[in-house]
Image (cartoon, rainbow, N blue to C red; front, side, top):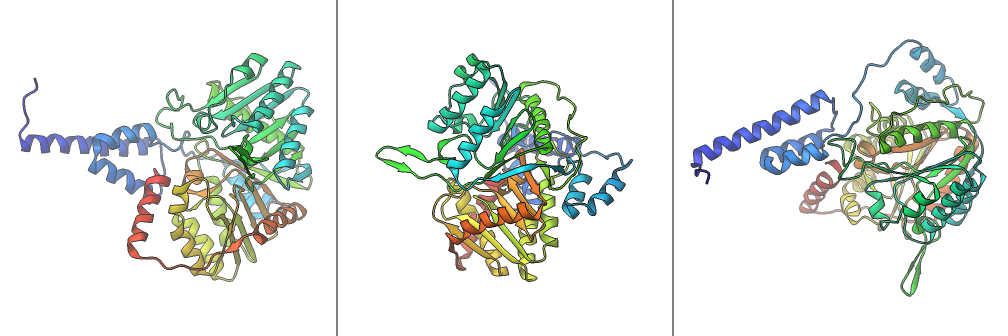
Length: 468
């Protein structure tokens, strides 16, 4: 038996534990150069102060948000390349992305913006059937439903026909998709990778970092991407007992060209993490920039900067006429929210389109404060009846950003995400027309005052669910 501790001894021991927890937090944050936003940093410090016995284990498991250290980039030739990019098709955004070490704008052709889920599924199947050498498919989740079975059956068929097929799904997303069986795929010759499995992660202390990137690449030449996961609700709707649930409103696209080769390079980097291999060197660095061009914009723990977050803030501050943003979850950090609000205050038309009720109740409960601030600034907020899962931001006629990024702090700072920035005016107009069609079917939300108690509750919910 251990001797009983007096109250003073207990307080001394507790103080040592608190001090050790805070020193561990500071040491790991400095050693790994973890740049946290003030609300997240305050949250961790309070947790370690108040309940260090719980807070320290949680920090060691979930507390690291970057897998690379902030680095001093080599300047040789970079400044000249950035200056050249400023005068190129990508303009300011293209140059800023290049300065962050992101891929240079690359040409593409045959862009198709999918009008609905049925077309998106058909285009995905066409791409999978077109492959002659390689197929790489990345999705957050794989549904155990009709759409998931349809895609996996085609992947298995292509593998049996001699195509090298690699399928990567997120280690947590697998369970959210209904825990589909992967045995049949492996038996057919499909290589399957689970990205950061919760209990056997190669990324120590980073099991909360999810891969949310979505892409299918055939032979490094064709790319299918956007916001859709490989499950029924994203394409044709889900069959429920006695009824058919309609598909969600979502956005995806496909194209051909060197941009697809860049997406394949990114997939191979992620695949190496998932299966524990050494990542290969990029193979598409020599792409020419014959218009039209677009730019692959990965964001997440594998980037030294918070790339998409910083690019969005800069774009909002420099918008001149209109910003249209579609997202299922709107829980931005104060800086990004201020960028949207200040754009509206200086006369830019800001339209934010959200689902009236998303598939995540906590996100709906956490978003009203940000929505109220936007409405107070003069922005317009629109609510769709069906679930909206699309991720799209169009700024003036300068850029359309489409891909996997949600406008919440988890997506902006913790997830592995990927967007494509389209700089060609014809492509921008096509994405803008798609967004306008969705907005036209939505209802405008009027301002609604709330009490102080609710504001405090919303703030606590944002901190607990989207910062840590």
